Image 1 (cartoon, rainbow, N blue to C red):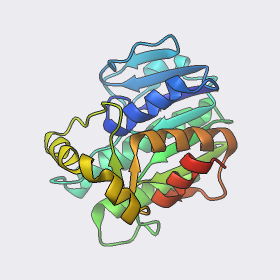
Image 2: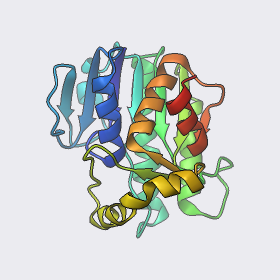
Image 3: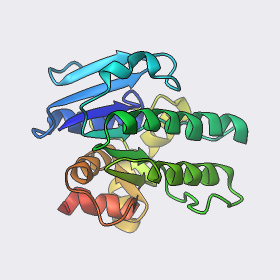
Image 4: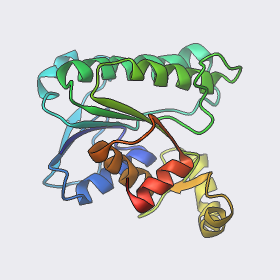
Length: 224
């Protein structure tokens, strides 16, 4: 399996990249981002591209892939709807349209979030925009598209978030993770589990197009 990964330098993307490089079924991973990752591996190929909303200049390098893991995203904190929509809906759909045209048999997996509003009409701005993004992705001519909706994600294996105050929160909560996992299995997962579940779904599909946090953990633990 050949994989394209966007958002490889973010916390979730780092976890997904790690699992891709460890998986013997993954032949190669192409990351696309504004910055190179710190990883070095024989299966890893990177394209540094500053304007991710316009991939026309690199289209010739994006054919022949089986899956795309879209882990690129920002927090809506402090953003108005127009700005959040530009980096959430507009950018995601722009990338997905190009990839679906070049790779019609591709499986596209999008990291959304718990609480996403599938109606696209709710009052919570981020949830509404995420829902509209999910719905638009499902209309594109991919072989399959899946929406991952994790809740709290615990970083493992030395993975760190690039957002300073998030890092402080994770550092405080890390010792309590086994307790949270026991008490709130519907709302807690890990970077490792998200990555493993993505790979399982890319290989074998899933019964539903949207996978909530509990579904992600189930696929990670038991497979499909």
